[in-house]
Length: 158
Image (cartoon, rainbow, N blue to C red; front, side):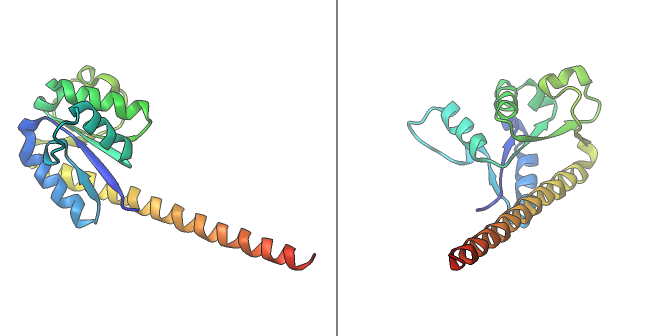
């Protein structure tokens, strides 16, 4: 199963979203950006919240535009309630009181003059989460194999 990331953002930050999606896709991570996937007839809230539910983590772009977006705030609330891993990228100079539900959480600082640095840090962190998930899956498979082997041995003793 692929590792999936939902990018929460303002539609005014498309350049950042495209750059981040490109970096994540280089690590073979599936990226969901709401406006890239049309689902005619389905409510936007159903589409967005459904994709957050199926994502492994949510990257939130808290730029000036993102902080003012009602959708971004709703997406953060939904992700935290699930609970999903939320990775905030917060624009340099943001007052911590403007972080709302993410106040007091660790974040990656985003500098508009050096945005690539923050996007790279976020991508590497997401890649580490993907690798951790893959390792946990392998460990479960090994444990399951051991249990099956022990069950076979115990059946043979009967």
